[in-house]
Image (cartoon, rainbow, N blue to C red; front, side, top):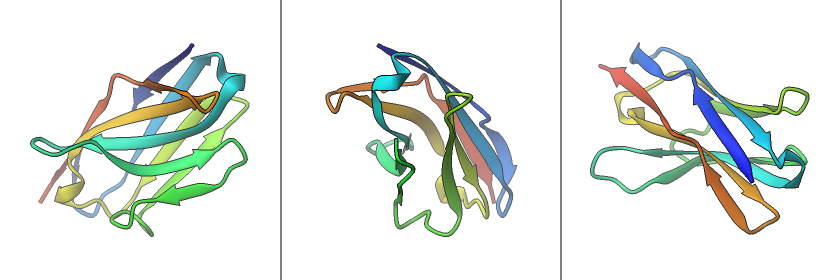
Length: 116
């Protein structure tokens, strides 16, 4: 099993930046990919960005050029650097890990609020 703990959310003005962190523990060597999802009130959870164990990254069109996903394997931590934040980025952000191409694990979520 994999345990995920997010941190770094908060309140920021439009145009500002935040960095989210996701610390993984447990069966980390079996993780194939990790990602960030978000869910705004009344909306479905959506993929924001993902990164494979080899370092290949993928982004939702809405965040391309503004967000950067990365991982520090030595620290077992994944990051999401969010720049040029917009009010529509307001959501609860969740860390996700895919283990053995089969099991999904989720963090508890961290609130990101962008004021206009």
